[in-house]
Length: 352
Image (cartoon, rainbow, N blue to C red; front, side):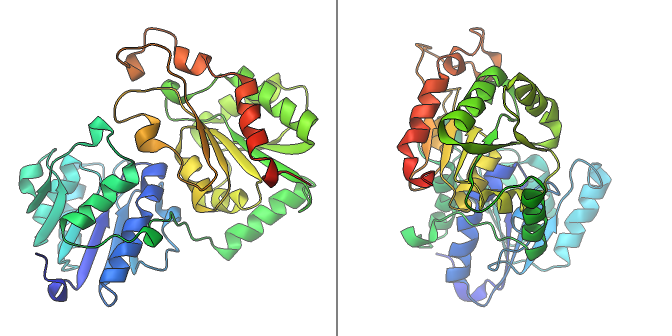
């Protein structure tokens, strides 16, 4: 059993994607509840630091930029000795990578908790890695690490959390004003962006959906995308009969979180911004394709009170995910009308 009195400095590591980091935020709050006087830091990538930089339960955010300044083996070893100087007592590695397990070992952190894969032998406390089975939601897999070290996880501490900066809110308010959006307007966000084709509903359907939202609900539609998917957003806009408002790759994650506060509903592919919206208490409709174990809605669905996900079984005995040879029939099977029906189920959020 963990002796909490000896844990003065804690590091939480989550160096992967946007949604993964947001889904890890309850871990921070549970740790703070159990280690009120301890120093708690979180190590993330440069791309996701805005999601936790204002988190009141953290004392420090450490950026590990594996794609740039920490790309080489030498720079990662140097980073390990940077961590060593911090004299951390315990690290929780929520997403296993060879580099992180090696670095935290070289940093001499006495208690190293993580999943038994990718140099898992370097950990002091190993948890069997069953995430690929998709038996529970990602948030529960992360919280299981706390249960493993003997901490109680109360239900009221499981909410996702993204704090926002005043300057980000002011920036978004200027953006809305520049596009003639008022508080009384019904503003709906759509996100045709996603990290890979297995998650992308067709642009022409997003375009038809957006036109219907404008016509049937008198909504103002904002199209958001990541910077890598600007062309996808432009394609959707060009296919529309009406003119949407575009926020294509030009918002920081902090600004995106602030924008969510102004949306009545957010409609998106299965992607990180879905979980940002949930953290900001904005109702979500999430479109899912793949059904591979570990990639399905069972593990990645949005968690808000009224959130809806749409997913179709199309008779695949085994989901090949990225290697699909059926033209992503699961995505093809989702119609515009089904998404509009989901919007109607959330009608209380869009009544004038």
